Image 1: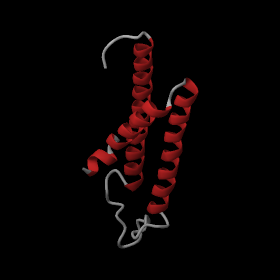
Image 2 (image 1 turned 60 degrees about the vertical axis):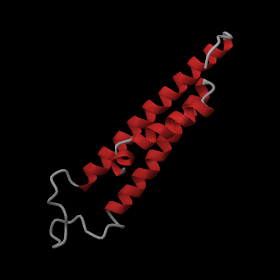
Image 3 (image 1 turned 180 degrees about the horizontal axis):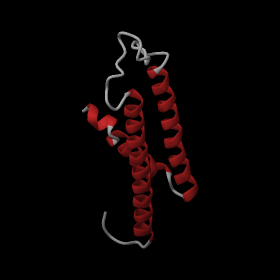
Image 4 (image 1 turned 180 degrees about the vertical axis):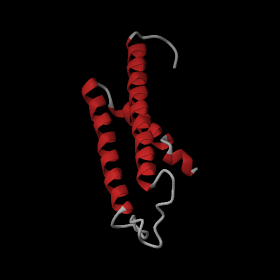
Length: 114
């Protein structure tokens, strides 16, 4: 279940639902996109805090309990997770907005169904 959260599944679903509910125009779609950027900035700031001052393990290779031996490094993991979630947010918001546009066009024609 954690992979769903880390790799962007939750971000995709939240963006999809919020765009379907909120993005009635291009301006509101931009608001949904910008809220995803703001969430990514907050998560990035918190992640950087946890990597540096809030970390139980120092990032100094001279310290005996440093976990700097990890090949990718702790900063790379944060960048990967934030990047995947940001891409998932953008895709989810775009899919939600396009779905809402298609649904509104379908309903404005008076087409039966749905």
